[in-house]
Length: 456
Image (tube, rainbow, N blue to C red; front, top):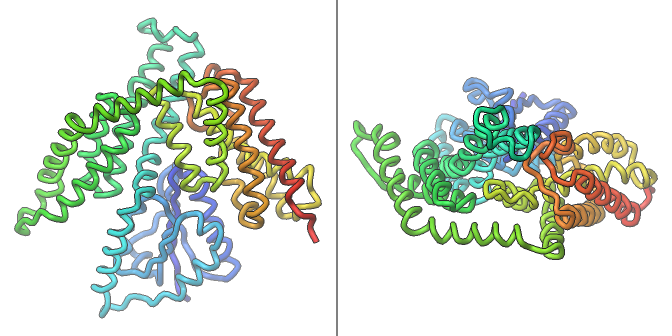
């Protein structure tokens, strides 16, 4: 029997990672295919593939939007897709993996060459590198935002008194966690591009972006600059074999850090700082009408592909603004991200004749995913009826985002769903924030009632 291995990973490591793994395992069980899946989620690597298992495997499925150390599969047939593809079409991926020809000793060199070429092409993916950085940054933003919110429980100005618990929490959350946010973003973007030689230049470039006031936008530019500088230095610099060990620990970090740092200080830093300052000033001064329009756009983006590139673009924009102390877009983005699963749950209740029993049961799970801010809970519904589901959830999320911004709500924590509402001062205008989510949920459900056709 052919043994198949798989790796699943999404940028946030919360939902897509495990949904893709479960989808592949369920299909493999039904077809009696021997399959092991490694998940690389927010809690770390689980069910890790050993060298022996990789050596014995017929083929490997890599369903990932972030770096999964694919170099360990060199010489093996690999099926590479985005993580969402494993949720939508697990059977097709398993069929493709089984149809691959196993590598023989005779063509091992050729397989390794193909693997390197494929990895090289994969490195050029802007989205993959950016999401690797965002994935590494996210735990810092979540922890930092919640610690800052906890410091406010003692009073909005309590942290100004030295030696108090409020001051300590603010120092940990704002002074440490948020200070690391941009350097980690830049460092892991560079790591995704150039692997270990890119990490130090990326971290240094990100720290300079933070010190210069260039914010998350400067961090992104620093990460790509450091990453590609290190990547091409590694490719171009040729040394005798005895001195090759100096490249990754001395020569490349030194040169790439110097090039990145000088460009950040003399060329990139000031213009990007001006852009970030202007953006922050505009966002803090816009009226209710413009705020609602921005919220509508961000809300629609959150629902459009339910965790895909468009969703992550809106989310990254909002998370990045937290470092500039702009909290309104984050409130709109999280509220709009909760609405699709919640709207589908309500839709299965008020339009039950238009959903199968399996979808009604899935609606209960969608409710839990929705209140936890896991937009991916809407994917199974959208996959079965995209022409009706996607317009419905986009409309509901757009309404939610517009209302959240129009109500002038603000959110300091970039994750946590409805549970962050219990933390004092984490969300401003809590009642109006909850109302915006409720209205968007109802709009989604009634759109489903109108658009969905009764079951035959």
